[in-house]
Length: 110
Image (cartoon, rainbow, N blue to C red; front, side, top):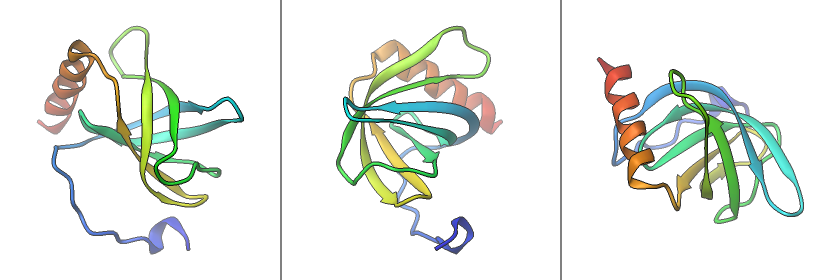
């Protein structure tokens, strides 16, 4: 399966914005480098050559364009196409960070 072969059903509950930034996903056993394709206040779509398993939890780190510092949180793999992408859910974002992401999505959509 190639990235263009996947045509999953859209089940999104929140609006998303294109992102295109590097991400780091880490467990005690390994670290995956990838690229965040899009973002919502509830999660990211990460494109990576290596992926975690469905429901696996990890530490996520990424930057939001136009904002200083890194966003770091615990995340969970909500769905995965192995070796292509992971749809991840944020698990412990602060209210302030959720608001920051919502503002970014709103401004990117207009």
